[in-house]
Length: 251
Image (cartoon, rainbow, N blue to C red):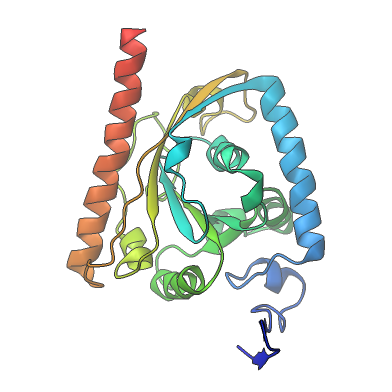
């Protein structure tokens, strides 16, 4: 990346400057330019309006969000609403900084899906299977060297029954040996509103619980370290879900 010393600040060439059209939109190097930021801002306002009309959202633990980027939000995944709700909850100061990591073979396989993923939820493609490790390496470099926030669903796909599936270890590759805070989250109610087998959502309520940040600076950047990170984050998200269920039982 080219840099030019301009005194009090440094000029850095955009990562995606040499990419055009759909290649740019499908790249994990995609930057949020003026047009992208404007479209994403409009989409954010529309999302807020639609969610306000049809979904009652309650959140707790907002004080656990880091004051500044970079950081990673990790949550269970049961609905297409998940990324929209989390991005809706984030403070306005983070607009344009957060990216959802979405399956490249699903959200970026057609032009219409690509436009929705990039303009509506500001998603970056995450390759599954072969090539995934290389893509995670590029995303890790971007996370540790930039002012960005990643929204990650380590299950790898939406739950088909509302129950959380085991996390995959790829997340460990992203944060092992770094000072980047990882914030566990749990979404309750999104599955009832928009499960995977339903074409359109229905009205309902969702609760987002946000846990305390975790840092894995001392974790080894190898398979053993990745598995340990996966286990700790999975346990933290399960614990948040259990706390939510206990509170509902008390009510």
